[in-house]
Length: 381
Image (cartoon, one colour):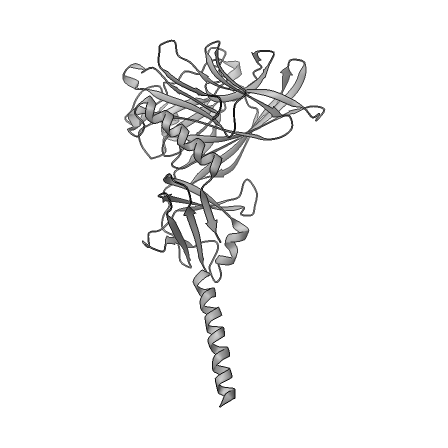
């Protein structure tokens, strides 16, 4: 009799442990511990920590749902240019203090809408263009240097009022400076930093590189597009520098994440001042220059019937200086040579209907700065 009781007791313990394991198996918690809401936020989950939750699940094709609503959650396996997964990206909206349980199912996921995209554009003088469901951008390649009257140094903005992808359509039409119902390119860059490009700033001068020479696409949607542009050596006040810029754009965001690295031929240590710029228009408009918070915002004057563009720059820490110089707003930051430095830059268009005035744009930049600084999204594996 005593043996049967002991057996029953051990069985209860085993079932309890098994039940606890089943409760956490195939589930991950994502929580917003902050006081502000996150809308359509792309959250990165470490793949090696996700794998234990994919027991008995085909990792090549699975479904993720919100356990509370049973709504499917879009995802992307991020490889960062390699062969093996590095991160699992999920897109979620979380109110302040809200917790979401993600459940992994061993069944095919539904169709994912592609919300980010980028590509090399050899048919247009080696442009590289990229976009998400909010906004589009492009920068300029080596071939454009042979067309001096069209050449430009900075980042260009392609405004859009649709959540569908437009880059290929616009290049195919060829008339992307005209409105065709989904937006257009009316942003003028010229020989400036345009909408948030960067360059060394030495002896009160911007030392521009030539246009990019090489590119590598690391990931391309549906939730994040990431690519690296390489710039050949050029003279910076007597020092030969080269640069790489890794640009990442998430679905649902107005902002790019830029990781820039400057290297000299001798791989020497030391620092260099970096200028991140926004071209200013001649007419009066609105600007935000907050050195302490590292936020530079500009709400352009209205461009006739084309509407109004807002452009912004965010540092994760205090800027060394911010100023208007030679027709450009500049945010200055001292960074180490041969090490990556991260900043954020992007744009918005009033005719897209989401951000329609300078107050909304500046508040958006402030909210994003808060999210960057505190990262209130907690993942419980």
